[in-house]
Image (cartoon, rainbow, N blue to C red; front, side, top):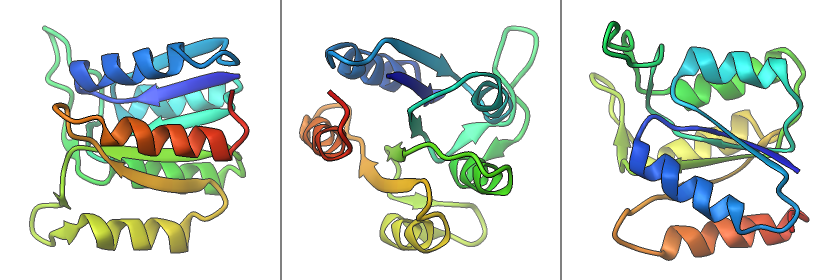
Length: 150
């Protein structure tokens, strides 16, 4: 099984990579750090499971470039593009924020509700990530177990 992780936080990306590297049937783990590189990778290769951050930079951040505008709903926009291009990948959103947006704030619970209604073809679940906790790992393991990922 091939897993794509789109996550700009290095620590969270590392922990997600470690999580999936301990799953026997995972053959390939690819990580991308922004909306543009993540979306390009989705259409470039075949993935069986997608892990999305919700808020991400538009482009990869480098010493030369700042990453462009922060996309507060970048993960939602990726789900929208998957639907538009008729790409099917079981997707989990893993976020460390409890609210999203700038002017129009959205709670994590409201976001979960919207994602389920709008993207039920790919969306499985949103998991709250706390770097000091392990609950997120248990929730992600439950998703992996229920979707036949070994």
